[in-house]
Image 1 (cartoon, rainbow, N blue to C red):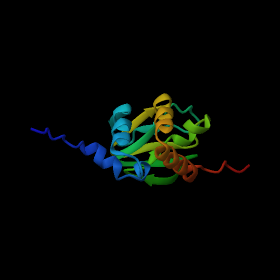
Image 2 (image 1 turned 90 degrees about the horizontal axis):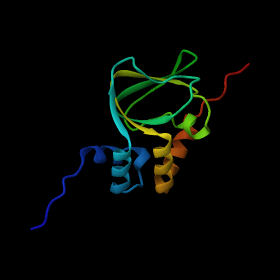
Image 3 (image 1 turned 45 degrees about the horizontal axis):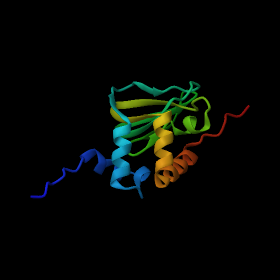
Length: 141
């Protein structure tokens, strides 16, 4: 008798995100297991501008507001990666990210994030593309 494996709904969820387009079910599963899933309340800062970056976050459910110098830049939702620019550049955070309503995130610390990028060229390429899209020009003056 063959055993049927249950599909993990979280893996199915992230495989629908651009970040995991082109990756295998196994890669998405490893990325989920390697990260820390957390649900934060409305108004909770996830990332603070001009602070060192130690992690990247994938929005699983809910939304986050991205602001710089107190001005809103964008509000993004499921499938968006935040915090990767500071992590990859080894610079201070260039924006503040705050939860809008209850928000579920997947957190990867630097070591885990680097390993995931190394293990999956498709994931690495997607991260690099998102990081380039998310870069914010330095303030004038």
